Length: 98
Image (spheres, rainbow, N blue to C red):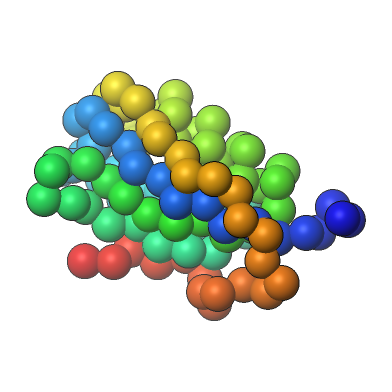
């Protein structure tokens, strides 16, 4: 598989991640990396989403979600689903789902 092989990955981030612009910063970082997908708040006070991109892009975003986040957030943990190969992007861009 070449370096442009696409994958998708679900994620959920736990900690102080609501009310601190976490979704907005996630959208900015994802677009900066060229990722597609979505992010949203959950009723459990976590943030969930799905990422689509190359391994390099996904690994950089996973690191960012795990240790950085928005400036006022505090990430306790980030959980990632298994990588699943894609033939093409499912989403046209990265969006915040309300």
